Amino acid sequence: MKFGVTIPNNWGVEDPQQVLAMGPAAEDLGYDSLWVMDHLFNTGYIGERLDDKPYYHPLATLSYLAATTKRVLLGTSVLVLPYHNPVELAKYTASLDQMSGGRLILGVGVGAMTEEFEALGISMRQRGSLTNECITIMKELWTNHDPSYHSRRWDFSGLRFSPKPLQKPHIPLLIGGSSPGALRRAATLGDGWHPSGLSPEEFSLGRREIRELAQAAGRDPDALTMSLRLEVEVHGRPSSDRAAGRARLFGDDPDQLAASIAAYQTAGVDHVVLALNSGDVPALNKLMDTIAREVIPRFR
Image 1 (tube, rainbow, N blue to C red):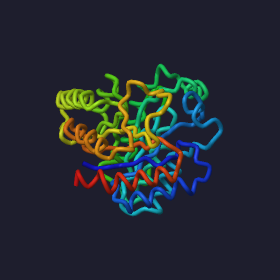
Image 2 (tube, one colour; image 1 turned 180 degrees about the vertical axis):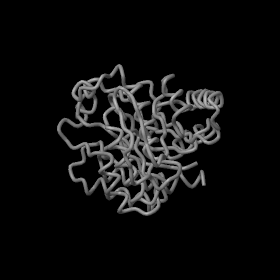
Image 3 (spheres, rainbow, N blue to C red; image 1 turned 90 degrees about the vertical axis):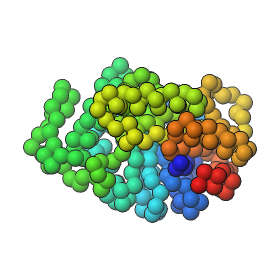
Image 4 (tube, one colour; image 1 turned 90 degrees about the horizontal axis):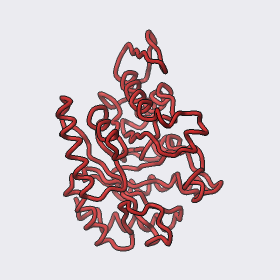
């Protein structure tokens, strides 16, 4: 099992250097991957948490970390595809994959923040079809010497696109979410699955359905990466839990944390991403160190 950890680009840390320093620190501790989140406005539950504190752009954060790390994979958990122009995003991410030595992973999703969709002038009702088109367009640009695509939204041909990603055939696309549409997307368009907030039992059921759908679509189920983001509370159980019913762990008990991760491993998780929920940088560094010393070695 691979272990990833989130970098708090989304927790309102005023000094970006504190956020960025956690990347090399996690690499030195032996983590396999670093992950960042994606939102454009501080609205909804994010606004309640941050008010006007900074939420740093995920790809800007990963670009910096690509230059200050050497080994760790660099992932998004998840990039909201309807917010992004797929041609520009394909260019940025292909460039970043080249510059990082082929270390980029794109966890992608359809989004769920109504206020953001409205602010951006994007139809939330069309988010599923937008996401599917974005994936198809990016793959076309990444893999074809003479890319072309024609739809009501996008129309291009006879245009060269370079660089291509270093990774072949293209940058891995892990599909976020656990809705029926997300499972179909992971099985037919993605290179793997990357949900959050699921119990081991829920993950196992989703994984089984994705594998069956992939096989029915003529794809190799064993080629799909099964990843999961696990929410880890840094300061114990919160007084107000807005994610009631969502699976979350608590970082103050390494034995409990290890037992929970083992259950997910049994359920078929290949790559677990620990989302450390705090903007308290000293506490985050302490917990990252504890997990690296007392939890990860049990799985190596």
